[in-house]
Image (cartoon, rainbow, N blue to C red; front, side, top):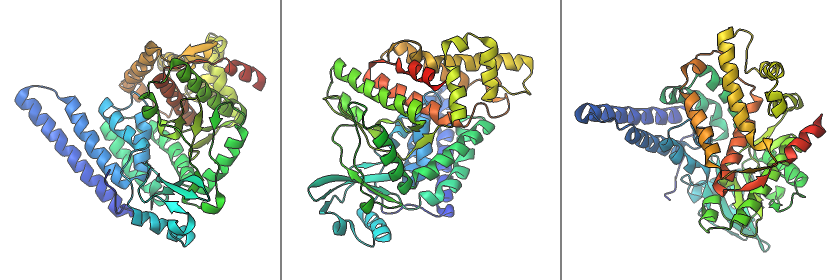
Length: 439
């Protein structure tokens, strides 16, 4: 993949790049409508492919928060057309990397040394490049290391990038402005944390230590003396990313084992630690044929407040779902329903959120769950598609739902998506035990 020799870092440079991309998108629409007039055919898929290509190319050059938002949207099935989702998924671990001179410049700034001064060997080409940073292989004292280097200017451009991208996203995808504001406030908080590698080091050590006894889940060791605000050094973990792993045609037994370990890892974090690795895309995990699961990135961690936890997980209980007054009270407490809602709108929204929450909670309502069940995922994508186009929901007014739920919902659906790709059949019963213990 072609390397980048520079990244636009100033507000003007980045805004100009967005404007140029907007011009390309406008040209794609002109071509689309012209073709429609001439041929009478509605090639909306072709328009989406062209737009996705141009937008991704631009975001890949800018990197940072704009590319990260695209990656996040690609995980939320049903929000974006398929062409966008497929293209934006590349931001998970195969974005265009930075050239080596820029890597050296980062080391000079934070260590006053080059990589060759610090390690016995250091690969000049990255092994993986994503939205916030890229990873290089290194060796020191007989150990194989992974060195994560943050792209220049990423942390300083978060606020301005989100301001620029907001109207673009609203127009392109017809999203509700209040809902998007609600979403972006939480996204901004997580992105600011994600660009702080010293905080990531602290959380990596804390969560990996707390989860060390989960069978079959492994974490790298971290090296504070070779890490800084924008550089993070850790052990190199063996394993394959999900696509590579599935290409080896693993047995169903191995798929189930890995799925169970992934579920147990998340189950423990959410219900015991009350903080969770909230970026469950395939690029953050390594899969091995012996069923070992490696976890390699704690940049995005969501701390779950106790008051939110207690209310939110009551909603997922089957007995509460069947108790209309109690279920409605919890929806009000979590701001899914608002006092200003008239009776007709209130009933409509009650039905909408009851359907959504029932779907999210379905895996918890039995001792085991088969994530190869395509009907379940058809329901998820169908529901998302249905309500993404729902004018009543878009015009309901107010930001619905708690901000603390944004990353938790995203975490669950990201987890479900990986388990679906593994076609894993797993035990989910620990949820009920943990909920009972929390009372």
